Length: 201
Image: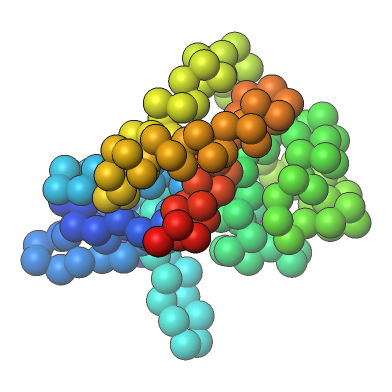
């Protein structure tokens, strides 16, 4: 099993990072939040999970080992494959998922594309004894509430967009961010911003 990949970021796409390792480019499927922390041409270390199928080998990359472990634990629930597990981590941090499961928060799980009310109820039951208790504190999210614009702008520039394009995309998703309850999810906003940029091109 490949536990991690360390090398230079050779390419970035909306859902993939290519890491050059010893002259070989390894494509890793990543969440928007993980991609937002990467920069073209810079060295990075990503924890990985290899998913083997009859017709494919897919490497998923994560910013830290906790995220990788949660990704693998989520797949122990019936009906959760790697894509849905990654979608859950694109919407929620590992600790947010632990809090949602610990507090039976159906709405948090329904916020993930592909999960309906019945699916959320089933997942809450199955994951209750698997994910464990939250490890962090909710206080740490306060700076993100103020800095989502900077985080989003930096992520878009890191993906290769011009600063002017990034400014326009941030402005386009601002109403969505300000309408959201609590801290805006930079990962979700990045997806929305990429959609506006794709339409503009």
